[in-house]
Image (cartoon, rainbow, N blue to C red; front, side):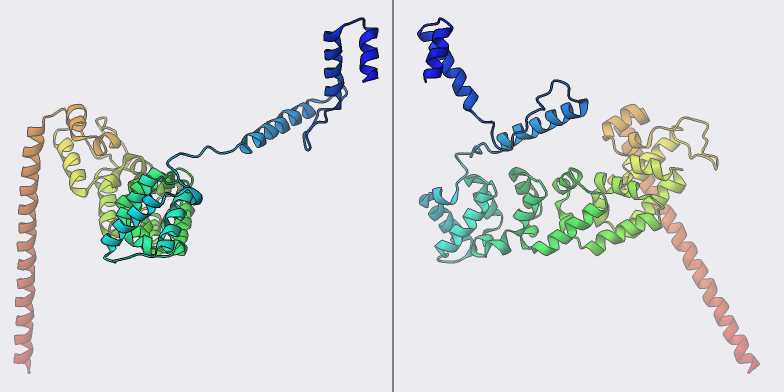
Amino acid sequence: MRDEQSWAEGEGGGEETLKAVRLHFLLQQIQPPVGYWQPPSTHKYSTQNSRSWRYISCRFSTARTLRQPEKTSPDSLLSTKIKSEFLEGLRQTVAKRVGKSDIDASGFESVAKSILKLGFSQVQVKQLLALNPSIAVQPPQKSLAALYMLNLIGLNQNSIIKVLEKCPELFGVKEPQLQSRIDNLQKHGLGEGSLQRVLLQSPQILNLSTKQVNNTVRFFKDKCIFTGQQITTILRTSPNVLFEKLEELEYKFQYAYFRMGMKQPEITKSGLFQVSLEELKHRHIFLERLGLYQTPDKKGQTQIVNPKPKDILTTSEDYFLAKVAKSTSEEFDIFKQLLIREEIEKEEVESSEWKGEEESEEEYSSEEDEETLKGQ
């Protein structure tokens, strides 16, 4: 204190000067926080040190941000804040739906708390229990496996509810099974981001065994000669292939490959597996008869410029007719009716030819038998 006062008097200042001096001495006594890295005191430090300073400063700032208390939604209830009215009303509703006169209050509260701790709101808890009321009468580790796993891979609460609305069967799948299936899908290229999009589109893939998924992947690799990256693209854009019969997938691939002259890279980008075989044939043959599509020769050349496969297959019918076929819906409808009639007539002809061959084989066989008997 004396040093401060004498130094201030030496400077010839009054009370304001004394306050400034006290502040100066106080700041000198403050130590930097533990773990806080300071740049070297020398004025000449390397560019590398400068980069390190910026990096560590950034990390320190981030750490301070992470230590800030998280904001909790007023609608999200923690274990100590669950309203008894909310729990009791919900418990009675669930009891009626599962056909039980009473549900253990402590067990029900444990399930409700477990759901709320995953970030779901009261309204969302009601939605989940409406989807599958039985989860309220089972231990959380058994009934909430789907919630845990879907939350773990990065789906938010609204997305999880959408997935379970489309596929409520996931409530009954055990955690080890879900983990194994998710790991297998990630192994085939459905990683961060793409897995979430696929699940929102086709959550039923988590009902498929790893064997079913692997069989489809092996089919694309062995029968269709797709590369690993091409298979991943197909799974991301057309997850429905995992539910289709391999015979149907093979027929569709062969039609595009041999009949339309498309190669694997084109097929991968075309969205071929997103459309039915019927729609594929209708659009292709319609363009072909209009003179707007030509199958490439062995060298891959055509006398006309074919439309892009994606414009043929994955566009809306209005766009396809207006921009690609340059035709009307009436003409397309008449064409489809005629094509169906042609196919029926073709099947009848093939059937009659097959019967004729069968009858001739029987006659030939009977003649051989007669000759054999005569020889005896």
